[in-house]
Image (cartoon, rainbow, N blue to C red; front, side, top):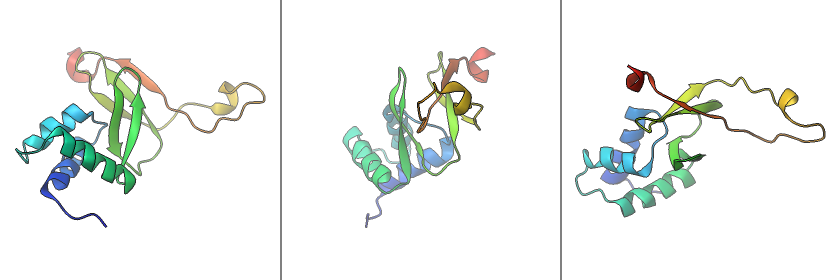
Length: 123
């Protein structure tokens, strides 16, 4: 059982307020607004615990590396803004594995990443 800490509470709150995939730097910056003493080692340690407990999941994003998001959401994909570098969730899935998988292959999962400009950066 994990003990309750102000650092872990701050990290959870960062995810609840942003509700999108986050990089370590984003988690650390937003977390320090809640707990000034938060450091990178503490963030990594707590992310590991939150992934192991099933509260978070890792995403391996092209060009961004490892990001984290709240686990248990319905299947979805991601959009990365080239200007602000933020990652956004795209609800649903238009991918049809029966039409996209070569004959004789079996699709076990997929992840689609779109990129471009988000609404804020476009205007």
